[in-house]
Image (cartoon, rainbow, N blue to C red; front, side):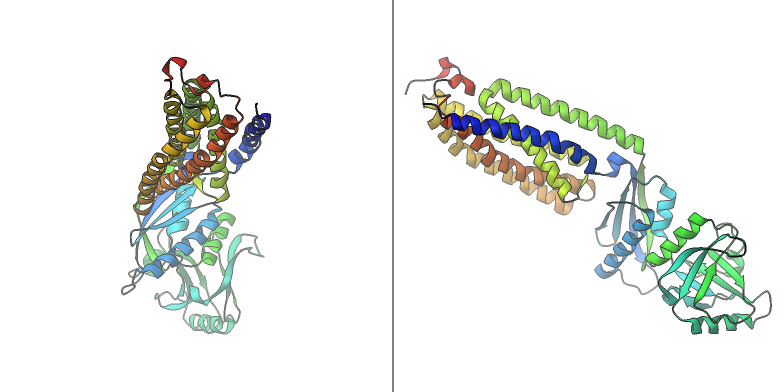
Length: 434
């Protein structure tokens, strides 16, 4: 007597799996965060050095630098940046979607040390005297040219400073605003340079008792003024960053890589589906259903944790498909061996599952250990590969040990295939009598 309810449940699960994949795939494609090797962008590796003699580069300084860089990245408007500490004094920054590499490099690496000085390079005020988020884009009321408006914490202190500068004879009565002044720099030399660190050197004729100051100049545009204001608001870097490596990937190259990789992956997965269906028949059909669900669940989980998909990540996903198929093949071959020995379909199914479980666990566990080692010791894209591989292993175990075996149990226990051992890839001539 056939159990038609089992067949009905199997059919419902199969249809639901296909519908789930069809309905969620557009959302997955739209919301997957692509790495710079697929989307194009900019990657740079910095070595962190002390800002001043005696400064110590410890974990606290590295963490503070990462936070400051992250604030700078917000200025660039980059979503999902990847900023990581490597070794003890290196920071790797990956910015997907960045087109202007030079602007990105300038925003990231400038220390943004703001200082107010006289023409003798004496410090009168610095960035600590700036109010929180005290820089903003503004426009000169007289001619409409863009300026950077600064709000200081103390109007009284600014009045004292401007009074001190105003007492000097012209043309020495100048309040010089520097960005990233370094030891050895001088006003006389820097003011002659085309790309000068001096952003303003306004003449002061009398005390200015106000908490407002402006940075103006003929070469300041609205974009550059806003960028400078954003950098100042993001805060100065507590260290110096020396670039030791950088690379960029064009958006077109990234799109080409994505298209070719996805196409190759689809061809490979389709070949696996055909192989399973041809050699294992009914268990192969179950494998196809679980593989569709497996891929779908991985991508949903990957998007759920806002992970970034890279070329190595896609490679790990395809490798995970191969591992999932391998687990299904081990189980299917065990069942075929039991059927050849003359056992019934139900007995062969139970024995095959029992004897294949330890092999599947061992294979997944050893690969999981390898992935964990790659993640711990690897950097950048290697870690991305390791993360996707670990997710794939977990989903492989769930899909094979639970979902695949449950679906096979529904079919076998329906008793519909008791006399149809050929549906399991076993020829009648291979079956021995008990």
